[in-house]
Amino acid sequence: MTVSVNFLATMVSIALAVTLVSPFILLILWFRDWRKGRLW
Amino acid sequence: MNPVNSAILDPTVGWGILAAFSVLWVWLGWFWGRRAKELDDYVLAGRRVGLALGTATAMATWVTSNTTMAAPQLAYQMGIWGMLGYSLGSVGLILFAPLARRIRALMPGGFTSGDFIRLRYGKTAWRVFLAISLFYGLGWLISLGMAGGILINALTGIDYRLGMSVILAICVLYTMLGGLRAVIGTDFIQTLLILFGIIVLAWLAIDAVGFERMHEAVVEERPELLNLLMPAAIMFLFNNLLFGVGEIFHSNVWWSRAFAFDKGVGFKAYLTAGIFWMPIPVVAGFIALAAPALDLNVPAPDMVGPLVAANLLGVGGAILVFIVVFSALASSLDSLLAATSDLVLQDIYRGHLQPQATAEELRRAARWVVVGLGLVAWLLCLPRLTSLAALLHFTGAFVASTIWPIAAGLYWRSTNPTGAMAAMLLGTAIGLAAYFLIGFYVAALVSALVSMCIVLASTWLAPRDFDWSSLNERRY
Image (cartoon, rainbow over all chains, first blue to last red; front, side, top):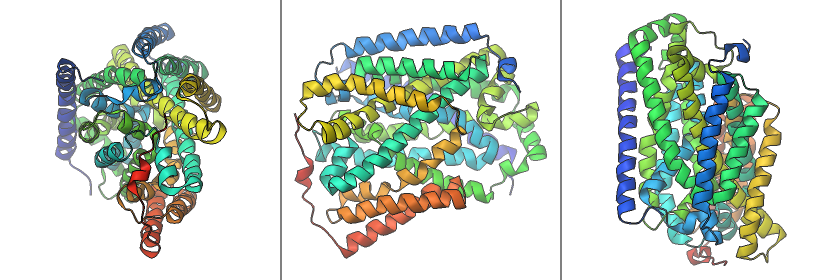
């Protein structure tokens, strides 16, 4: 059972979208911790 | 193919990048570590790490060179299931989230995973666990050191031994200077670099080759890579899931963070890190499927990622891969050095050699343990013994045997020491037999299954009433 090109494209696109968002969330979390003096 | 002739980057550029990042990491290590006078400050970053740094360090540590180099390798060897199987490594991080919360609650003054096994199951099981954990730690260190040498060699033509030595030396230096604070601080920057790098690489690969062309060439030349019913790959998927869970549940890399995170941070940090980590092997791995379309000659499967990137993107791509894998390597190497040296310091040095050692003496010894561990790893990396994935999966039989003794030991009063020890020993032995008789893709699966049966049977047949408060040991 061979996967279609659409399956491959969808799988990679979803993965890419989540990876694209994650650095921004990390930066927001960092800023929030830093403002509260709770980085470490 | 001669790596020197096929190298995309000039060795001078490679040395330049290495030098720039080395100066940055070492300076940050010194800067963050200069105030770490107490043992807790040095080995556990003061036990007050927040959510942002906690999430990033869990992500960065789990995104190793094995992810950025072995994910393309697995995609090249096992196709779709190779990538998805690797992604399931994130399940370990997600499942560890509740464990991290429980570890922090039960052992607020704990230092290592060895502390838990010693207090929960006694000294004999502790020694069995230490043997497994140290073997795994060294195996992972070697695979990381080797990955560093291979990457530098593939991209710049710099000799494998020289590149490997430089990467190890840099990580040893800044970990020694700054302890866990340096490790966690640099992990945050390294996470951002890794994420930025793999996003750019994936984006450009899609732009340059496209899914249609990639799919067409793979169907023509290696159709099995796109087959959803590839039996070995499906076994690999489950095996990798259990391998990842075993690695995280037992390793002091993750336990030391559970102790270091501020109250209430552990659960959220591991859960978020797991969710963000899950797509990374797909994003980093799928570019290997472009190899048939590009008609690339791949001399060794573990070089497919850098070769595709360099072929597609030229010098810029090679520099980007270099930075991504260097960051991934450093973020895991430093964590592993710090956590394994804690294990050696607390469980071997203090636990077996100097039981009366004070916190101050341990603080001084900690630096030398990091250096010693780096030296041992360097010696074992010198001969390039095996492929990265083979070495990595060999340890699967060991670590998967610890999943049940740890999980059951944290939640069930009735699990007994004999059952836990037998589960680790027999799980490892039968898992290793499966590794040699069947294949690497079943070692962790068999080991975890055997371990589970033994823990469940022994808990049911000989229950014990464990007192949770005995885990709250205050040493210093």
